Image 1: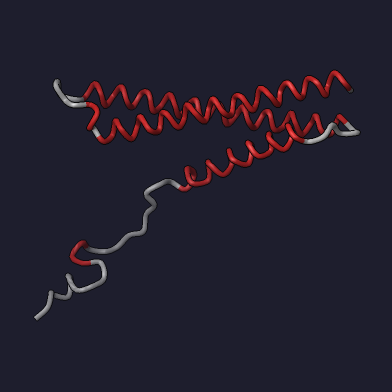
Image 2: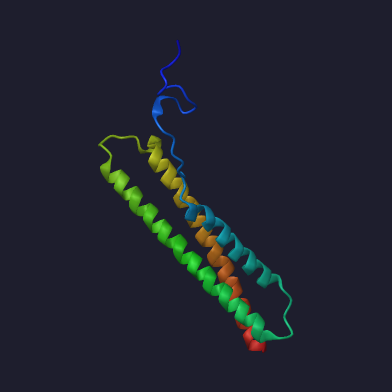
Length: 139
């Protein structure tokens, strides 16, 4: 005799299977958008000085705007992570070993990644802003 019909199936006794994403779709797309902006910045930084400065400067301005928007998003994410860390720490019982609290470890890793991303993006944006100033003064 095997399991009853409600337990006999590919999904076991857990009931019906529902498809859901662990990571929201918007978060899956976000890294690719920021990587595109970073690639655009690097392309503009290494591009030769254009013969027609105005279209190039317009492209630089759009890229700077996009880059600063992403930097603000990263800073907002960093703030949310810092706030969550404070909430988790405040909710821990006295004497808890914080090094081994899994959520704190994950949050600390996310915070480190966010900080590194912000620093790298801000450095690229500063270089692009300087390049823009040079090109505008030469035009």
